[in-house]
Image (cartoon, rainbow, N blue to C red; front, side, top):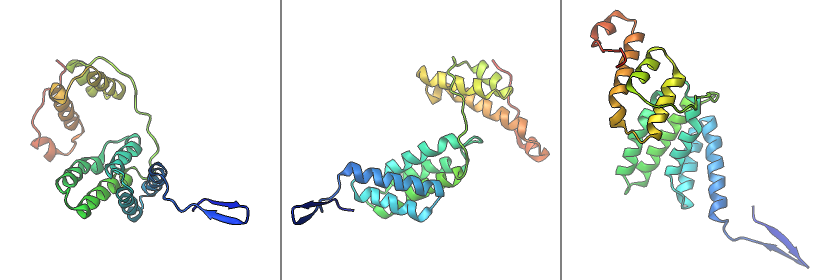
Amino acid sequence: MYPVAIREEDIWVDTSAPQFAELYAQVMQSLREAFLDHNYDRIAREIARLRLIGGDPMDAARAAIDRSWTKLEFGWAHAYAGLADWLVLYDENSHDEETQLVSLVEAVGHAAFDSLREADYPFPTDVMPFSDAGFLTAIAHEDERAAIGMIRGALEAGHTFADLEEALSRGGACTLQRVWTFPYLRDQSQDVNCAPG
């Protein structure tokens, strides 16, 4: 729609292009609607439009994460795991806009599917001091609030993945040991010391 004004006996139509901010807001709103419906074709069109107006196509992936992470109560599923690979493919093909578009559409489309019709989950927001023993105790007792709080505390304190890797790996292995109920899988697992400390 172009703005129209009547000046005396003349009708003036402003045919100048809309400002970038206005176009960007329209595209991102349309992308949001497509995401919430998991409308794959529309997601593709809106990401292409984002590039055509001069926006950063990666904003589509950022928005997908922002719109979906609160809906993933039971974990990342396939979308976030695949997202990293799709974004590597995007980066490696800077000379090929078509491959870049496909990469972003797949990444955003999977996130839309995994969060489709899911309600926001109230993840804990506590921040607690991190310790390996405390974290493993929280995992062993399925104390989500404490486990997440300690990870938040570790990140706020400047810890890196390398600092947390052993505790995260042990916590993950202990969780898998606990939930594996099939004898074959249990036989294939290695015993992990799940005791804190």
